[in-house]
Amino acid sequence: MTKRLVDIDDELLEQARAVSGAGTIKGTVAVALRRLVDQDRAVRHVKRLRRRDALDWESIERSRSPRSTDG
Image (cartoon, rainbow, N blue to C red):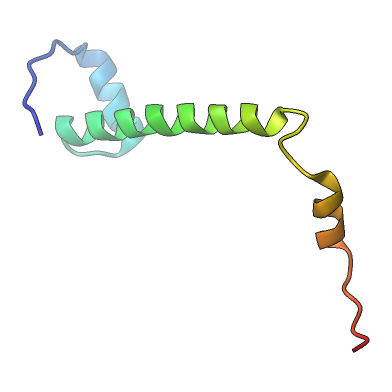
C-alpha cells in the first residue's frame, strides 16, 4: 500500500463519512473507492446482459418449467 498526499474537500469528506459509516478518513476513502469500482463493474455487466446475444432466453425458460417426476 502506498501513502499519498491529497487535498480532500472537508465538507465532502464528512458527508462521505456519514454515508459510508466509516470511522476514519482511510476507511471512508476505501469505501468510496470500492463503491466506485463496484458501480462500474455493475454498469458494465448490465450493458453486457443487454446485448441481444448475451442470454439464451429459451434455456432460461426451460429451466423455469416444472420438471417431470416420471422416471
